[in-house]
Length: 114
Image (tube, rainbow, N blue to C red; front, side):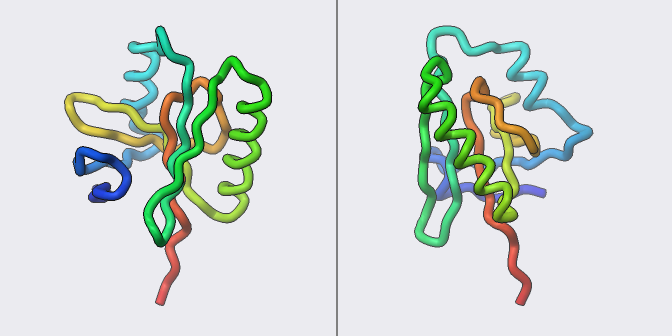
């Protein structure tokens, strides 16, 4: 599935959401560990655009706040993805557990039928 992510990313690229069996994002993140920065970001899609929560993974209070937000969105039916750039494309891999060392995550609201 390809989702146009015009309001997620400033560069208006497309983001490919890959299945759990395809772990390109995980491999990329393992091959390129965070070095200078230990900042994390959770972008939450909403009707009026997206919200952004950031944290420093060395700050326990910020990590707790980010973990709490992650768990709340997941309990509300949001799909959560960790993201990376692989081969010039932004890719996302579904995640079920919060990891404060993931640099960027996206929360996608549940789809509503009509």
